Length: 155
Image 1: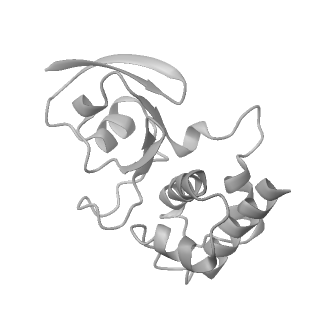
Image 2: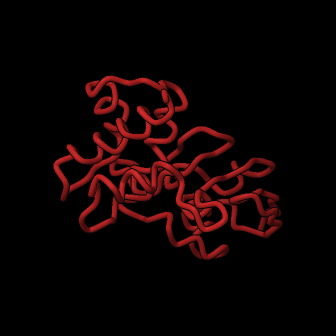
């Protein structure tokens, strides 16, 4: 076992983990952060996307021990004081989800995309979200949600 200290959604945790434990499993099984979804377990779908020290990572490709001393933000930590994060609200407003399985990862990847490019074109949004798969929506409303948040940040 290896002892790690990590800040998840603003809360400090110190736990003993098996060195081979994936970050996604640590978040879900030890911390109960089930909003981080296990999709493919091969880094293809992006459903497990979280922010590690401010950057998007697929948590099925990161060991929990690699997050030691770092901050992890999950979809569950986005809402503040009962108010959805603007990206969560945009996904709702634009009907950007159907089954919802990809939604946590899409939201986290979309937030990171706008951090790096606050005024993306439609093509840049589609390219920026390439590592996150959705089997239901056809992506158009996901793109609209990202555009809505980008537009509100310009205002």
